[in-house]
Length: 342
Image (cartoon, rainbow, N blue to C red; front, side):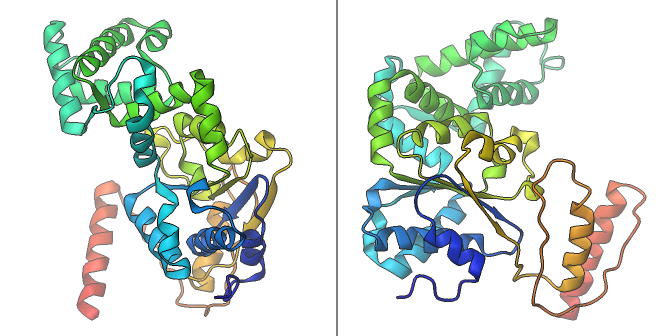
């Protein structure tokens, strides 16, 4: 099959660029998943071993969709590609390598949100803290944010600025000790332990840098500190790192996403090539005109302007809501009316 069939000029350029750091700024509806899958197919067409390709995205659904598309293009040969979410990659990596930490066994268990909440509540009780003043959910979120910034219990304690944070640090320390006693990791530990192991163990780091000759990361604007470090460490060998994202679509700042990761990519890799995907296939001209007008006010962004060959479309209507509840009611009522029409 023709790898470049159906691609526009910018998409073709992104698919054809296989060597060195590559930043693909992909606007909404610009076919970024199509570019990623065709780029993987092109790597395989050029004789790259599938097991030396690592493709990371944010959701299991996106990873499954990408794998299905590549397999439809290339066939079962594509099954050997390491294609997964950040957390799935780390879990797979740690099953093989975690015993090198000297703290965990390879048969570790992974605690979900309910498990971690139970442990936090138990620690709060053992430390005789008031769970109204020290809300378990808030403390669990504080621990999660610390881990996403690569702060272990001691580092978190060292930067505690007030009495409350010092108490949170105590909970964090005991919480982590309990997890280790049970040979357990929480979801944030998957990243934290992986990054720590790669940073501190040169033999393991070199082995994985040699293995993954080509790395692709989707939704790079939503990576946090730990995910950024993981990507940087793995790409430190061949430097064939392709990141795809859009600073204008960053939505996960509340869970630690750092938009500067994508904005500073060209500083991290001065020899990087940058390709803009600006043609939109999803929306009408009126919608894009409004979107561009709003996005232009963003202070931290790499300038681009979306355009489309689609129809002009209906005019945009606006609704001035009195508060967030009124806004939610208007949206649900509008959806309900549209549903009745169709």
